[in-house]
Amino acid sequence: MTALALDIGGTKMTAALVGEDGRPQNPVTVPTPESGVWAVCAALLRDVAEGHTVECIGVACSGPVNLETGSVAPINIDEWKNGFGLGEHIAAVLPDAEIRLAMDGSAAALGEYRFGAAVGVPDVLSLVVSTGIGGGLVLGGRIVAGASGNAGHIGHIVVPGSTTPCACGGIGCVETVSSGPSAVRWAREQGWPGSTGVELAADAAAGEPRAITALQRAGVALGQAIASAVALTDVRMVVIGGGFAQAGPPLWDPIHESIALHARLTFLDGLHVVPAALGGMGTLSGAAALTT
Image (cartoon, rainbow, N blue to C red; front, side):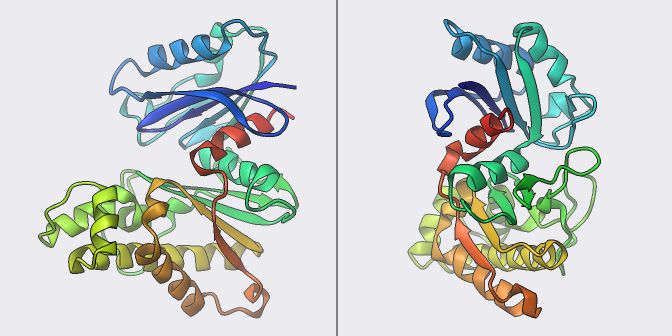
C-alpha cells in the first residue's frame, strides 16, 4: 500500500508518496515560512496527493507533539509553538485518509529500523542533528512513544558545563551546544568569520582552529548525551543523521571518544554508533511506516 508521508520541520517541509519499500517517490520540499505555515503545508499536501487515492497519511513533525489530541507545539516553528491542531487540519484537506502522527525523531528511528542502517536491530536510538537535535527510540522493534508521544527527545538532555538557555525554556540542553546553529554561534563568539554549519565543517576540515574547537565541543556534548541515553535504554545501536551530522571526522571523532569515555557499563560493550543510511528522506520513510 502506498502512503502519503509528510515531514514538517523548522526550516522545510517535505511530502511524498511512499511505497512499501520505504522509498519516497518524487518528494516535494518547500521552505517553512515564518507565517502562514498551515497554508503552505496544505498546498503541499494537495500538490502531492493530486491524482492519487490517498488512504493513509503518515506525519512526522518537530516536537513536542501530542498523540492523544493530534496537536503539535514545535519550538522551532514560532507560529505553532503554543499549539496547533495539525491532525484536524490535515483531516479537513484529505477527509477520507487515516492519519498517523509521530515526533520527527521517532519517525526517523522507525525509518532506519525498517529500511536503513538499523535493519535487524530491534533496539535503536536515533538522533537527528541539524538546526535542532531530535531523537527517537525503537525498543523491541516498536517505537516507544511515551505518555504524550515525545519519548527519545534526546536534544533536551542536559550536558555537563553548559549554562546556555535553550529555546525549550530550560538551560544547558545538548541542543544549545551541538546543533548546527549553536556550534556556529559559539564559533562566531570566538572570532570565526563564517555564518553556516556547512562553512564551519569545511573550515574545520581545512584546519581552522576555532572551527575545529566548535565541532569538538559539539561532538563531546553529543557523546555525553548519548552515553546517558544508552545507559538508560540499553540499546544496541545509535544511528545519527541530520544535516549537521555530515560534518565528518571533526565532529564524529569527538563523539566516539566521548562515548568511549562515558559509556563504560559492561552491557554497553557491543554498542554500535553509525551514520544514518537514509539521508534526508529517512523521516519520510519512517512516517510512511507509521501507517503499516
